[in-house]
Each structure stands twice: as C-alpha cells, then as structure tokens.
Length: 261
Ligand SMILES: Nc1ncnc2c1ncn2[C@@H]1O[C@H](COP(=O)(O)OP(=O)(O)OP(=O)(O)O)[C@@H](O)[C@H]1O
Ligand SMILES: Cc1ncc(COP(=O)(O)O)c(N)n1
Image (cartoon, rainbow, N blue to C red; front, top):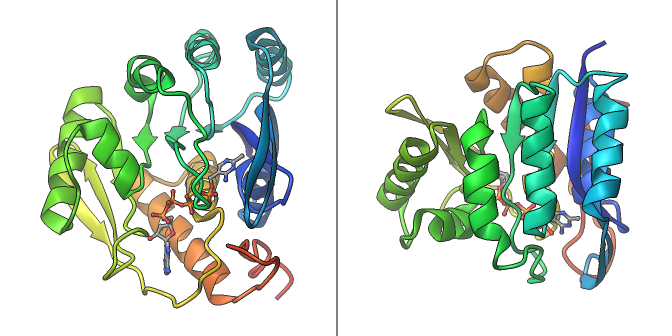
C-alpha cells in the first residue's frame, strides 16, 4: 500500500485540517500519516483557540515518520509560524521527500486567521520552491502573487506569476469564484482548466484541505499530476454533492461518500 503524510493543523470539528486529510487519504486508497503543527479548537461556526506545537516537537514527529514508514507523498496545510515552516523545509530536503503538495492555508472559511503575517515570507522562501504543486484559493493567490484576482484572466496571470517565481506547478482553485468552480493548472508555461459543476451547497468547510490531500493520495499511487487533479476534483465534487448537513455554521463534507456505497 502506498503512503501519504499530512503536515497540518488539527480541526476538532473533523471537517478540515488533519482530520479531513486522513479521511481523504483512506477514501483514496493510501495509508495516511500525520505530523501536527497546531491544535485548533474549532467548529462549523469558527475557531476559538489555536495551540501551536514547538519546532522541536514537529521535528520529532517528522523524524518518527520519515525514518520508519517513508511517505510516497506529502501534503502541507496550516503552518502558522516561520519557525515551523523552516523546520518543515529543512526536513523535507533532508529526507528527500517527493510529491509535495503545498496548500497555503491562510484564512479559514469562517474568517479566522490561520497564519501569522511574518510566516507568509517564510512560506515563499522555504516551501514554495520545493513544492511539486501549490494549491492556493483565489484570495491566497492574490496575496502570494501580489495582484488582485477578480476574473479568469487574473487567475491565469496570478498562476503564471507564481509558477515562474517558484518553479512549481500551481493549481489555482476557483471555489471562491461567484460564477464557476473551475480550477486552473499552470505548469511548464502552459495552462489547463479543470472544469467543475458548481454545487449549490453552503457546507464547504474543508474543501481545500480535502482537494490537496486527494491530489497527494493519487500522486502517491503513481498517477501523473493532471490525472491526480482530475481524480481529486471528482472526489471533492462527489463529497459536496452528497449534501451532508452537520452543525449550525459552514458544515463539513461527507468524506466517505464513495467509500461505503
Ligand atoms: N460550490 C462548489 N461546487 C463545486 N465545487 C466547489 C464548490 N466550492 C468549492 N469547490 C471546489 O472545491 C475545491 C476547493 O476550492 P476552494 O476554492 O473552495 O478552496 P479553499 O478556499 O482553499 O477551501 P476551504 O473551504 O477549505 O478554505 C476546488 O476544487 C473548488 O473548485
Ligand atoms: C486546522 C485547519 N486547517 C485548515 C483549515 C482551512 O479550512 P476551511 O477554510 O475550510 O475552514 C481550517 N479551518 N482548519
């Protein structure tokens, strides 16, 4: 069985972060492992607390995983401080990690800040250059590329800027678009749209975490990037279409929609 590691924050409500990642990995046929960067006290209505791990404890988790069950792919989600980002960058280089999916988590759907301001430059310096694929949503792409992203042409321009600056593929997700749910892949000076049916579902907590973990799972299983994105997008679309409705706020997806069917 192929293996995948998520380096991310825990979401006590189970819809995003580590919990979404591990469920997604199980549903997409890989053995999932985790290195936790922070605990969040969170539910469908918001985040009420964040407790970061120390860089030393993150280091211990990474050593434990990489020296025993080597991951075939790595997904990186919420990492809020520059020190933790440096620890991850150093270790992924040291252990020669491959198939690295970087989801630059900045703000939760509920509005909470999940990254310190000074961590954004650490992210740019340490993690983007080693990413196989970077998966920003529209607001994150605007911050990272330093330009407004208001339409499809802006999405192409921002993805091109990021791909050229960091030498990685960029999947700019269209979930925040008012008109569609199409994601744009920019890689090797070419772009391709992954078109998605926009589903009228208010419960989208964790869609970004789920998509990036599904991409990592399919890369771990040996698929190329475009095939992995296509399978991952189909998986997220199915999970949204399932119309799970839990909690009073922005609820989670059904990660098991294709599992017990
Ligand atoms: N209403 C929707 N219908 C269909 N697909 C959607 C919808 N909303 C988001 N998606 C898809 O979900 C994936 C995640 O996109 P999105 O832009 O929402 O990421 P995100 O903002 O990082 O997610 P998160 O909600 O975890 O912060 C993309 O493939 C996007 O196209
Ligand atoms: C621990 C953690 N990681 C990531 C997200 C982003 O997901 P969303 O934007 O759907 O809330 C989150 N809310 N919590």
